[in-house]
Amino acid sequence: MYAKEQDLVDSFVERLSEDEPWKRIEYSTEFNYMRGKTDIVVVSDKNEVIDKYGLCDVTDAEFGRQGFKLDEKYYLYNIFLDTSIASPVAFVPITIEIIRSIEPPVRLLMRKDENLAIPYSRMVSIATVGFQKWRGINIVFDDITEQLKSGKETVVHFDPQTFHKILVYIKHGADENGVEFYHINVEQLWNPDTFESTEDVIITNYIHGTYYPIYRAFEHIDFSVNQYSRELYIAKYRDAESLTGVSIGAYANVHYKIWCTRGDNLEPEVWVKLVCASLDEPFRSIFMETIGGSYKESVS
Image (cartoon, rainbow, N blue to C red):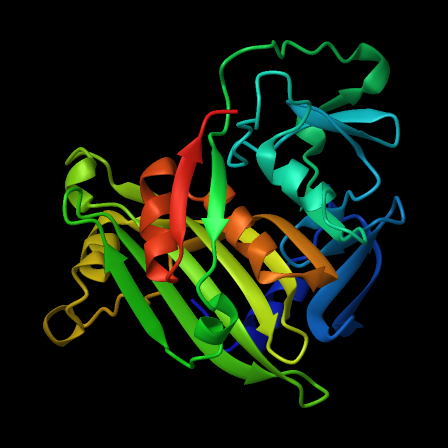
């Protein structure tokens, strides 16, 4: 844990090694990027920019069902990326499809694991026309933009049948130009009874975005997985800080970034679609109820 974000950045810089993917030529901190600021960027020996989370710009890649082609290499998707598809004959996962459908195009950053890469000429796809599919959604908005501007700090919504919870944490901020924005964080919290008593590590899905009311759009949206010790997670889920000393907003032991998209035109509808695509199925309806909308499954 770090008391300040700057401490995290300093620690990261100190630990840059000569191993992949951190064979660096140079790095810079407090790097301006669009309306916001990136704490650190690294340039590898391949002249590719890698941010502090280990994400690379893969916007120009050729995406497929199981991975993507870039620079004559084929990379498998990260294990935490849901590769469910929108129809039996879809060519890319639903998350990639949503991001690529945005006009004008936005940037996409993902992990590129060299240990999961081969020369593209040796790539053999085992994807089939099958039934691993995303069940499409129809979204109804009830003044969602106004809700995002409401200034609420913590919203918790739960399913009375499963006792799974959705945590939405909203934090007001301002960028370097003094422009107002909101950090919007969404995390799925499983009912602890879902897990076996022997499971010492609990993983949750976590989506973060920066929303600018003046533009009525998000500047960036990213997806991570959070890893908690069992003890910390149960205390967080209980939401009884006065008794446990742990708030429902407690940070995870490990925060692992999977992907990020950046652009000037990430409208609230895109955010909702990406959140629903990133949450596990039991949490999608809870999330939509939390923000005042509705969620309907439709078979395509």
